[in-house]
Amino acid sequence: MTSTVKKGSLGAVTRELIREAIVATCEQMSLAVIRTSHSETVKSAMDFSTAICDATGEMVGQGVTLPNQLGAIPDAMASIFRTFGDDMQPGDVFMLNDPFAGGTHLPDVYVIAPVFYQARLVALIATVAHHADLGGMAPGSMSPHAEECYQEGLRIPPVKFYVRGKPNQAVHALIRANCRIPDVVLGDFAAQVVACRTGEAGFLKLVEAYGLEPLLDHLRDLLDYTEALTRAEIRSLPDGVYRYTDYMDDDGVHLEHIPIQVKLTIAGDEIEADFEGTSPQLPVPLNSTLSFTKSCVYYSLRTIMQTDIPHNAGFFRAITVTAPQGSILNCILPAARSGSPDGTRAAIPSPCSSCFPVPGAVAPIATASKGCRTSAPTSATFLSRCSSRLTRCVSSNTGSSRIRVARVSSAADCRRSVITACSRTRS
Image: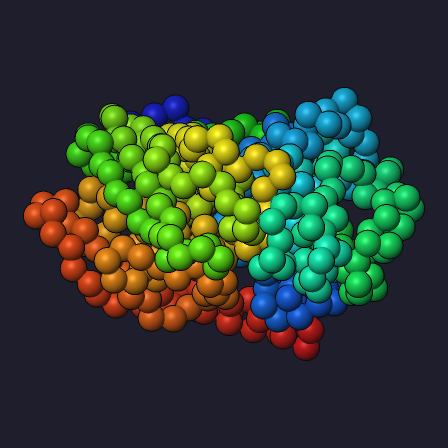
């Protein structure tokens, strides 16, 4: 496996140095968000993410932030390129939150800045943060009574938040007029812009240190290396088709269980997760777009694989995710979305992990007995909150299931280290 992975590599030492530098830059972006944000949602709860992408939009590095947000970045980038592919200029900053144009749910707003070197697009810096309010029928833009997305708040398609380094006053005015606490919200947007500028400065330092072409070559090599490691890990698993069905207790209105059904196919060095048989979308804010569903599958499978696989878009290449259009995991307009990160986010990983052919594999989200879970919104999220989780483990050898308690402490450790580093920086 080692010889296969390293074949054709440019240089393991340099690649690793660049990878660590990219990750460090993403962490500096995270610190910039913490230090300059206004809302407790972002500053204290740390409900945000940071990443750096290459000029094609493939993520080459990420901060120690929220995996369910980061896995949706490819779709957000694709939406930006569709809208502004020929209209990116130095100083521009793009934003979007439209769940049906690459976003997740309305409070999560992507702020993305292109990086230019000698008039050439060389990278894109991405941040996403959960904003305290974007209008809608309830403060916080997350109403359990919403039946369609138009009731949930301001839907922002890809637009320019800054144009050639200057604020787009029309967009700023539109946001200010549609939220209950505009100073806080715009303050958090400003923090995201600061983080983008921090990432831009860090990336350009790497360009100066390594040279543009060598750096880009090593980043491409890093993605290929990650893909090779991922595929090698998948090849170590037994080929086959694995099925599992889990249930959300109800949708908060009706008492019927809501099925989340997955068929996991492992063939050689690829995995396909097919959610055929999952519930149709519902007139409640628990629906998920395919971009968010893919993100949840990515981090669910990532937890079962080796920890030394880098966190970047190379990991995504070997995984295919499909769900029926119009289902709760691939909803269409005008489906309500605001509660999805606390509802379907908790429901998707369990069937993926439970049917995975690894003895003792642990589902990363709390699972109740008999395969059912609560659909009530919860702040406990994988790798962003840490507690004892009751999980269902399915043995691929015996087919029997057992219940055990799993404790995930790395999230809290990462959280403490970021805050400590921030405090030391301030002092």
